Length: 444
Ligand code: UGA
Image 1 (cartoon, protein in one colour):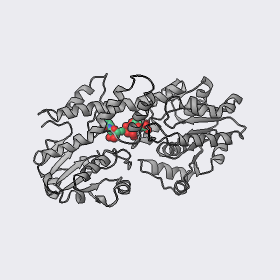
Image 2: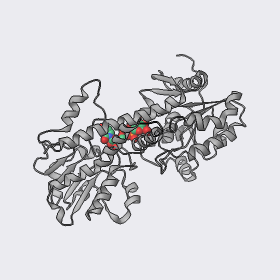
Image 3: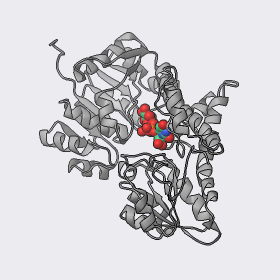
Image 4: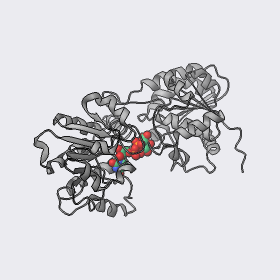
């Protein structure tokens, strides 16, 4: 094997979803890793092996790394920077009120990092992982560090991340692509050196300028969102056409290699902390260029209407005249996460509450997060059975594996009236023919 040189020491600044997944994966790969965050409580918990969110494999990677001592957690940014060669900046870029992104954390972190790196003699590489609007690296971040870049003691590269919640660690171990945004080849090559140490075989890597790298990240998520709104638009047509099924249509068009089968699963609309936020940010960013974002606005509009379309399926059942009980199975924005950010379950619960319905909910992971939001307005159940008991209609809103196994008998046995709305298409309509069954994209 080629000599890949001394293993670089890594610091990760900002231990949110991307930062923490990255930190434990680096540590597990044998890099001396320091995770740093301003949240003292989070750091104290991480030191004793308690992660702030659920993600498959995260706990195991964290436990293993703490045991071997390859990971350290601290709030001391100076210590972290002076004792590492390369830092990933992973601070949050939440949506701002005007649909731009909030650069507050980027600005305060870069200012502090600059103050510390001024004191450092050895070369340092700062890698921007946070999702930022095009030109942020060039116009907001690089100017802060201009003196150090000119002196040759620092380089900055933009290196967007494509990892998905629920499969983050696998995505880090097996990425489909690495994108390196650089202002000169030397800067990008430094990052490539790290990736050559991380991977036995370097994954496909595209070198580009920093602005294109930022735009690639938005383009990726916007394209995925577009596919979902496209299939949901067709699903809504299918709902009006007897005998049709969106799943068959998605399967057929997905066979065309120019289209592809992924992200054509009709459902209640996309949620999560990334697709909705990045789409809005791109729309906002491109507002300054005439007539460039009509398509993206349509994608948002379809998505905003999708919970209403799902709710309208209720009209097929006759029971709504009196106060009734509704069960919601699935609160997380997708399976294998406890994340409810921009989850469709929130919108649907709000709309149902307006109709004066009693709401019972169950999710294998996201109950605590949902409770913080709706408090005593709804009923929290500790099992599927408890949630279905004496209910008049059940919405399936998340595609958890445990829900996929549900049999019609359970709904018939437990519910007062077995009305079922499958917003995720995880139940087989043929098997559910003797309950009142409606599903997204399924013709009458
Ligand atoms: C998304 C991207 O997939 C990642 O590549 C990206 O790195 C990440 O955002 C990010 O920017 O950090 P994630 O938010 O974890 O990842 O979730 P997705 O798997 O993209 O799902 C987003 C939403 O679309 C979910 O609500 C999901 O249920 C929905 N979806 C997905 C559908 O309704 N239909 C589909 O066919 C696929």
